[in-house]
Length: 130
Image (tube, rainbow, N blue to C red; front, side):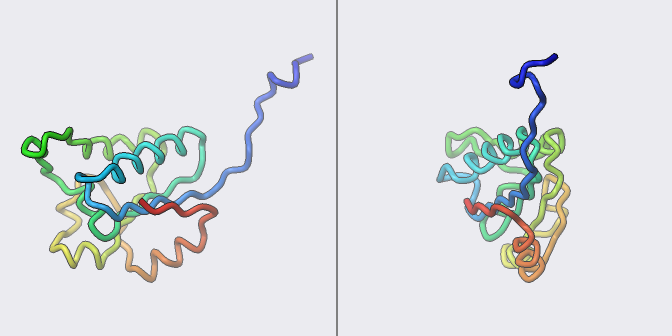
């Protein structure tokens, strides 16, 4: 007979949406969001990651950070799939406003309108904005 603490107990899976709105450097928001996303995924939760406003720059190809003395952490976004974080979305209007296209991004994303993102947000249990 197994001890109660040896049983594999899993809690309910919650739907988490993380919205990245800030540019990748100059604040801690982008890096902190990435860490929270990875931690949440490690607990087998349903994770969605949205890039909106200046947050779209977090996944822009060709980031060079030597001039600002910070480490370029953008390649970490390519590792998200290994953590089962596969629901990546970008706000179409944010891309358009910044003159970016899907080809400018270093990861595969689904581009959605703000209205579509709002509908997706309504389906979540937890929404956190960084």
